[in-house]
Image (cartoon, rainbow, N blue to C red):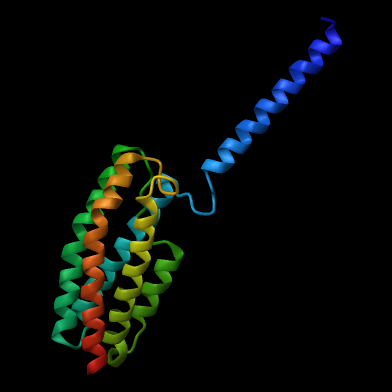
Amino acid sequence: MNTILRTKLIIYYFTVLLTTSGLFYGCHHDNSTYNDNQGFINKAHSSLQLKIAAGNLAVQKGQADNIQDYGEEVVKEHSGTYEEIKEMAIANSWIVTEELLTTHQKKFSDLQEQEISKFDLAFAKLMVSSHEEVINLFQIASVNENGVYDTDVQTFARTTLPVLQSQLIGAKEILDQVDEI
């Protein structure tokens, strides 16, 4: 076989190889929904920090006893999950920051700035919306095709989902109670 033909064949096979591997990667990794492990850890960790900080604030600023009690419950329930995520991240050398993500910091700042008379309602609304947000995050992470690629994180997300869904029900009940006042 002459050298020119051999070179053309090598280039052709190399091009086919690159094209098919690129198509394969693109089909299996839709970046619009695919979470990496670090991204999931960052969002979940910050979301839990927000809930804990808001719960502590509710204990201090809440006007109704049920808001203060619920604030204590939120801190207690979310602290364990928060520590689990932190331990998982450290064990896998993922970075865990103690700072809230910008969106979570804004939500917490808005809650801090609420007038006392409006605090209970704002807190209850934040608990509902933040639980809905984190449930969505955990649902995506627990799915093999578009979730995180670490199986331990997938399992963690899958087993934590029912707890988060139960907490959302509690948050909605508190919101209903505040709305009735």
